[in-house]
Length: 335
Image: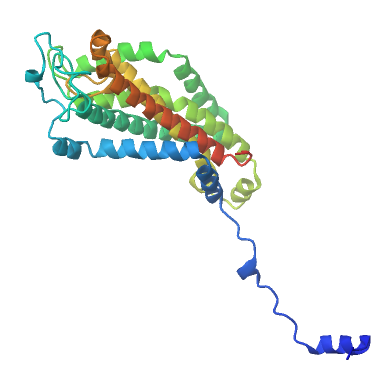
């Protein structure tokens, strides 16, 4: 039996209303900038592959002593009995065998694989340490120059311009040997720790400028924002303004600058060692290995192939991950 319109309305009013949708249960859940950046980064296959490669390299570098113990060969151990009368490795492709996966060095007979693992350890330590130091200096200089302005900005900008005007390579060629002779005589062996410290120092003297300029520009655009004005009006001190208001809004460009600085220091350290003013023998290093392989390019190409390809893949993975990280942290990115 059909109901009249009046009866239908009356019955509808008598029926209990459906429970309203609770916003906590089915509402839209917001995501933080970090979560959005991670979502973008996960969609980038190149970034994921680069990240896996870098994790593998870092694990190998950290586990170098354990690998040497399991491998049964030390980085400076020589196998002269496996060289011919001309100092060349016996066998094919530079002496590659089951005991020596990448062959042996000509003349000295050291294992190339274990030397590369220790060389990777040296390069990554110097690069990460230099990137941390230069990023810290650059952030401190840039945030002070951008926020305080005036004479502070003028002085820091002038120092930055002077540092950028100095030729890094010529300065390094002149300073690094002089520092070594200042503390050690010409016939004394310079400790590896001192060599590493000098390289980090020379990178720190020049590498902070780009980060400082980047941070300065970001701070200039942030210091007139409403949240900064509100903190200033509430009587917040300089430390609160810099570390609680400005610095949390600078983590994205700082992270990108750090990720792109590491590969530049890897190649820079290898170049200085190649020229003979970086890491010296007998410490394992990519630059020295490539330099020593030059006379054997035709007779033992494996000697230059393995270190060259390794440092190429390492630097390429860092650059690709840095570019992907920059795109992921950019809110206007279309990727």
